Image 1 (cartoon, rainbow over the protein chains, first blue to last red):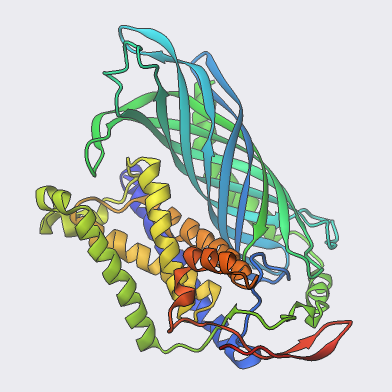
Image 2 (tube, rainbow over the protein chains, first blue to last red):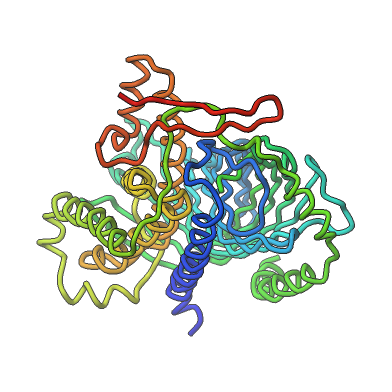
Length: 254
Length: 232
């Protein structure tokens, strides 16, 4: 029952959060118009720490490990982009919804079909969405460049595998315009530090994140016109897992 | 190993709530934090008279018109870009039954990241050019994208979770970067940088835009006075 409506519930949640966001913004706009100049600072990065809504964007390097039964595939270096919208209150807690987009590359990824076993180079485009809570580490007094936070998150994501095939590869024709999408839940934890929170310099952060994702469903997709065609859908054997370690540098945009 | 993982995933939401309640119990010196916020000086005010964005009060009716303009452009683009798909696979039945079938779409990154984000970034820049704040421009872009997903695109496909997030969030992020870079270039006062600035943010050149030069007071720790700018 829950699984059946999971995606719809997730979408409604996004919509509800947006709704509250809108209410908050109206109030903020009212306050802005009564107290301050209408000419705003041009700076791309926010340069004063405030409670309330915030938008964090980050980019960085990541290392991924794909585990399937007893087989381990390792991608030592990939990239990722992160984006987070949250509400920061009482100086210590942030309630967030966010996303990571990871792009690891796997050399010689073992592919198994009922008839054949072989290795292929694969790009994984992994999109994760999560709800998270960010909290200041306890017993630490914040200062300009020392604002450590911990974040725990839980969500759902989809990873798309793109195959790299040489022109003379025997699978070239059969895999042409095809890809595999894996979907499943995830969770993780992050440790971050914010810089320049008490000065007029742009606010930025460093964040170390560890997450794990369990792939539960597999879709074979063919690119066919404007809408992709799902050729096959089946559950995984519940043994496909992706572990990712990310190091991100980011900024606070508002 | 397998069972362990399933237990972990099954009980993680409970763990998540536990951590959340633990967080509320933490002690944080809120006064210290607030002091640090209040101590920020007026140096954050603008220091030179340059082309800049002007926030203004906008009526609800005008907002409806602005949102309508953006949605009309996207609707036209959708019909023009996917005419064959709409003709072959679109239907009124899809339009209302797809609303409840929100899912992770199976599109490739060229659609989900490049096309959608690119389109949304123009929506963000349009709202900015009408005088909305950064946050309000982001909110309007988000609402527009959500309306498009649930009330327009459902003619051919169910709403996409990736699009609900990536289109407005990454689109606004790209819009913020593009706007900043554009204003930086336009304030270099050179024909090449001017052209690049207008290409990056075409809305700055339109007569109705709220990117203007102005006269403002300058307050820093080293200087107090007035900076003037004349726009010809």
